[in-house]
Length: 179
Image 1 (tube, rainbow, N blue to C red):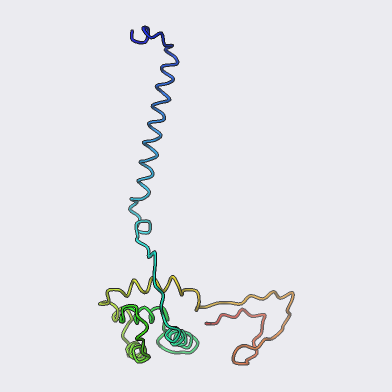
Image 2 (image 1 turned 90 degrees about the horizontal axis):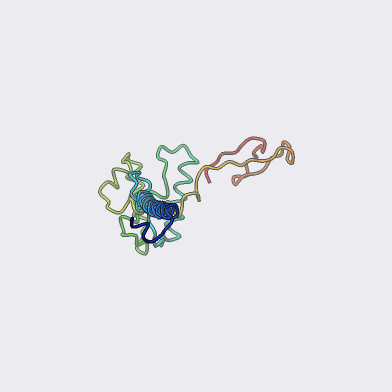
């Protein structure tokens, strides 16, 4: 009766109600899905990432640790060093301050690793080792590692090149070296 008193067409009124309900339902669904993405139970989406890091590692520390890493992978050494792990250990030990870096600290660490102690054992009680490892991995990963050189055989056929040690290397073979 209310509808007849205002002389509103029933079809227009029902259509308007349906449109309003669809709009309200779409808003509710939008906000519920938007909130579900942020509260996912997946560990990778809920992890806190490092947003800022002061990278103040000295050139000397980087040079020494990278040299240890490269030499340990190019020789038949029992212990293979990871320069990022070495730097993260030194940073955790010194609170990230490399102004007081001493080569003797690195030598002591290398001595411990050579004696058979694992890096995980050395760092288990260090509160900030994981933080420095993650931060330095973000900055330095990819600078040192295994690589391969691929050469097109159509342009160079059975040629040889000299590497850093002046040893001739056949180009047709794939070279995988530690750099």
